[in-house]
Length: 429
Ligand SMILES: Cc1ncc(COP(=O)(O)O)c(C=O)c1O
Image (cartoon, rainbow, N blue to C red; front, side, top):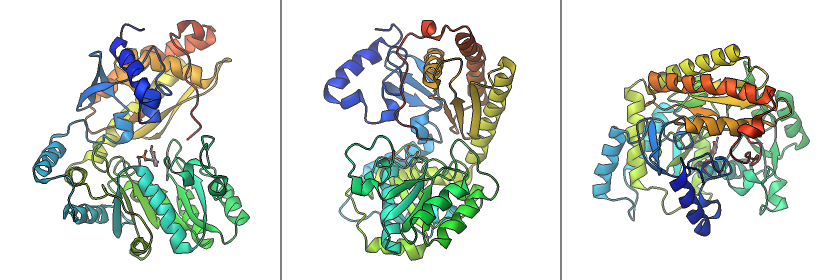
């Protein structure tokens, strides 16, 4: 047992007796946090910081997997939730907050004329696919990126146990930023594709005109265009990636970032398509849960009132510029690059010197957690991050990058690792 994470590891052992993996989310589990060099439980968070069960403090660049955009315990959101809590959480009829949040989204997101709510991003993406199938009267979907845990999508990945083949056969993966790849999928299933579903961007920026061409191609083949903006929404711009890139899809899915970490997601889109939600089945007990709606309204208000997104972008730019400088200075070109949007950027690890990217990443995680920074190799910026938080992370990288390089070039990575390397869940992005 490690000294620094003693309580976390003890709790993990206990949790694993009643909870498979000891976590509700793969990305918060020991599949991503190598055992022996990682915390497993967080006690509380404030602003840009969290504290684990052993009392270690971290500047958090994971931020609840991108859900926390304003910062932990944002006072405006907390006030709104406290006020709503006095009135109640769910009722036997809708609360007017439902339409207030729908109206706020319609006012901010270009494609949004009507809105329905869910809880997780997967609710929104599964709803979008069912709606597109109902609207087009077709069954197949083309996908690119990650879209959640439901059969329709996860069946197309390597982690598809439990998904019937009949469902798997309806989902077709295409490569990002490669129009020919999409064209091939569409022409292989003429008249069958209900939707083209993609993250408008994740680690890689699209070539000029790519997203507009995807829209044109989808429509030419009679499919709806669905942007999965579960992460890019309310992060790239107040109107999401569709505003940032000026390409308006038929439908868009939102989740993380909609309510600063409260559980709510949304499917939004053209009224003519969304109206069909009245005919399909998309309905659940907690769909109109009022605390998350109150949190969402307060979050969206703050986005409109204050330069939240612009500030996050500036902080992220400072970080990306800093990382690029460090990679150059320490000569890590072959092993590590940085890419993405400033508000959600990625360290891209590569195999090097006979070591797999997972071995190199594990050493990175061991060293970054030990220095009081939480990141899984992405920089999920929140409005609460300060320039000092960013500079602190860069100072930690300034120590870790030469260590990684020395470990690889000196063939001593295994010696430096105090844990087993992580293994890929399945390649997402
Ligand atoms: C782009 C994207 N879509 C959909 C989802 C699924 O959201 P959830 O995990 O809330 O169901 C995620 C989650 O990571 C995501 O990143």
